[in-house]
Length: 132
Image (cartoon, rainbow, N blue to C red; front, side, top):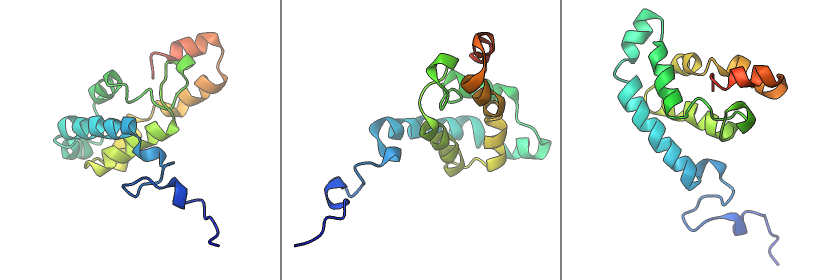
């Protein structure tokens, strides 16, 4: 008798793990949105921003308009999605030609906003909604 490994019954017909959190239909669609955003809004300008040593605020506004900056924050703080979604955005920006520095600049809001979302009072959380 063959011992069950736990993986035989968890594989999908295409070979992906049934529990692969990175490959849900929603996350594949999110990757497509991020890839298109990166191709349109980041890659054509990246060298200029690298040379200048700054990323324009307008890029954060455009990413925010798409909902990319609210991922990984609780709904009560104006967020949506999970940490996996937020990590997927960063990963896809890099895979699409962005850099770690660009991602750091784009996701700077998460340094303070995550703490406010987790432990802030009602006023702080209300103020935070404008950041995510």
